[in-house]
Length: 239
Length: 216
Image (cartoon, rainbow over all chains, first blue to last red; front, side, top):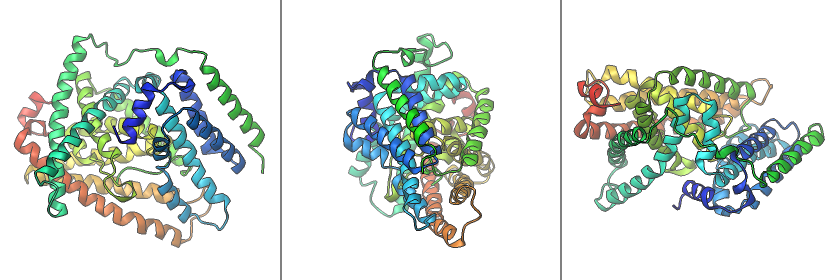
């Protein structure tokens, strides 16, 4: 529960901000719009303004600051690499190279931190091939069970001296540990499939429609989208 | 090091747009061959791949990809779908960009797709752990090559002429040792996975008679 992944997932389910009450479809469209503006913004002013709007989203969603910073700050290392490779002596180029990915990752963290995963994946699964859409749900579902099992495995390896010795030996032990997770994954998939059949699996994992149940809180999503649209119109050509 | 850490907004549109298009076409084609039981197994191994990709094990957010072993166990089509699920979920968690999902899937999927046929050949002449290690190395080499090609293409500013060699040299100098390190680490881990599966559950490995009977 200490890693940012698990915390984001937890916040998405228990959060009480207006963003948590808004529908997933609206937030997904808003997030895609904000990322599109960040990626295609031709001027630094528009990029800075969009970045500020996304910070307002993130802070008003009441997600833990450490989690937001961990998720949003992830691209900084690689942005730094690109800044170094494209350095032209101006301030604008590095700012653009840092703000674009930072805005996008902050938007993604806001979306995932305010929306439970079945609601995020449900609209995506509608437009993807059936097996691929189902794969999204099943992969995410398997993740946390495997993370908990991996944690126990690492603890057991450490206690039995499996993490000592030269790196080659440690990596081989880690591989054997992952082998146990493969076997566990196989057994788990058989049980899961049997459960799916028992519950009358219709050929698609999620039939929920919560992702498109509009509420009053969606007014905030519409308002933010309007602000972003206005900023784009005003600042698209601003120098 | 076969996962593209490149976030949104750094790659030119033609690059990530065409990557997304090619990945979607391949997903539609591969989706026809999957049945629900198979999808459940892909989900379980995709979860393992996701856990490996999400957990850094060293500086610079270094992590395993497990593309080779997952490709060997699931086959190219299944591994490609798992790679897409992993890339999409990671992008939603701010780990790699949403616009780069297609390219990420292609890079991870290429590593997985190459590993399986190489394993098929090597498993006839050597023991499972070694076949798994060498086929993973082959997959990593291909995936790493693609990764490097994308990074070099991205290092060129949009619409600008080719850069001075010094800029590209900096990138290659940074990426090449990581690539080699990744190749070694992934291969040794694959060796361990192969060693365990050979002793404990050989039916999960491709090629055996029991595999067809038991594995989904």
